Image 1 (tube, rainbow, N blue to C red):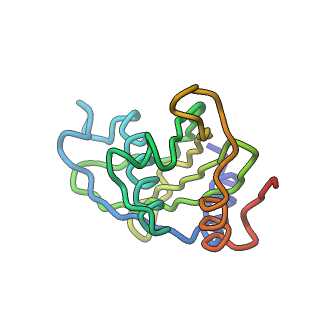
Image 2 (image 1 turned 120 degrees about the horizontal axis):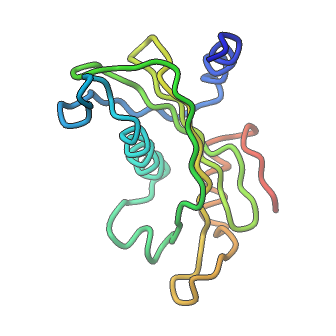
Length: 157
C-alpha cells in the first residue's frame, strides 16, 4: 500500500470522535495467526453499535428493525498491516455523510496507539420495515449525528 495513503489515513484520525477498543481473540485469527480478513467487517459492525450507543440510542433487537431500521448495502475495506492473537486495537468510527435515505460510515482500525491495520466504509440505508423501501433518515437521528459529528459531517437536507 502506498505510504502517502497510509499517512493520509493517519491524518484523518483527527476527524473521528468515537473510539472502540478491543483485543484480538483466538477464534478471530486464521491458520497463519493473523486476524482473518472477514473479521474486520465484524469489528466495524461492533463499532457501529457502540457508536449508536454513544449517541444515546439503546441497542436491542428492536433498534435496527423498528426504531431505526437500517441495512448495509455496500462495504469496502483496504488492508495495510496485520495483527495477531492478543493484540489490542482501536476502531475509530464516524459518519461522514447523511443523504436522503443513506448514511456513510467510515472506520479506521489500528493497533492501540500505533500501526494502522485497515480502513473501511459502509453505506447503510434507512428503510420502512413494512414495505422494505428506503425512507428518509429520521430527523431525530440526523440531529443526534449532527450534534456529535459537528461540521465534519456532510448532510443532505
